[in-house]
Length: 483
Ligand code: F6P
Image (cartoon, rainbow, N blue to C red):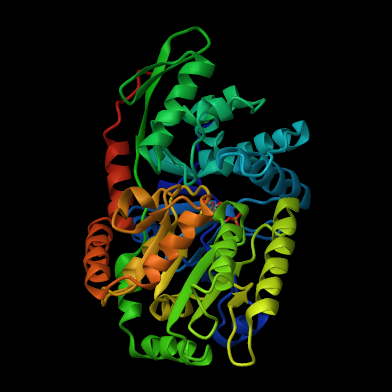
């Protein structure tokens, strides 16, 4: 059993994720404010940073550049422990196994997953490196929280090295039904990896149920209610792992405050003005990913222009597609398709004054995103499968005036919580078209009623609520007997 190294083992609370929650500043920015790193946007770090500051915490993860070894450093009161990935690790573990095997497999096989033994070998090696980094730096009886599908083997690897630790895992993406998970040649090893945890968290109850069915089917584990009895090779129970849903959320206050800032309200007005003040602005915001249903959305919008339900003078669709995983083949193909379709639609319907689709292949800072949410009358979230979808929650958080309409795919985790959205099956193009038209024409009182109810839901369930529920449940998990 690996003992913590005395000079490094100084942390009581460790978060582990593929990426560290910081981005490197551009050379220009670094020259201006002297900072080399900037905190990444997103709710997870907003929720966890204060907890780490309070409890001798550190974050373990990759810093985003290949073939670069960095010493542990601090940023923004957070201790960061970088894990190195070589260019080959990035290709095999990150682009390969994580994003061309697991990602499509866990998202209803929307794209065909590829199974390669060299990718799997790399996934194992890299997961071991993350586990080693934690094992060396965690104090006796520390709490470790492992994040997401890139690191599913870490809990078991950690438990082997450090049986004293409390280990939680949270899966941010869906967990597939056993009928689909069955395809994975390494299905048993993945389930065993996750079962190294004391608590395995999922977005939806159905994800937790899928996981428990797989544990039963592929390991013969005994599962009672939400508890899975984990046995060693001799057949003795080593510990009990609990599987449960904890739907993630966003930093609601942060988004709401930005939405009331005069410069951001002014920026929203400017965006509308720059588009020629159309009667209706529709908005899509996604990573450019085949799970997001961007093609279905464009198809429905194009047909609405075609059959005259919408006119280019009255309606513009802003589609922000942030660059993502650009070296993975399926993402390249998708980009070609989307950009071809946008060109086709605009070529057919644009006039000198008006554009049908304003397509932006960029990422924007949160201030600009909130201005876009404020400018948008109708938000379109048409994912074919999505663990949660935080964009839907951000739109609701930004609509402090209780106006606007959210069209939301029933295949998102967010649909479980935002029940007053206009729910759609994005595969049903006619249904999607009629729901978009309903949203465009939604009477103000109905929009207010729906938005108010959705805002109440997310105000009561922000990302702090999520992390404290998870960590409280982790603290309460049964202490194992160390046989
Ligand atoms: O939960 C989905 C996820 O893979 C996160 O782990 C990650 O922060 C985000 O999507 C962006 O993906 P990537 O790190 O591959 O750019």
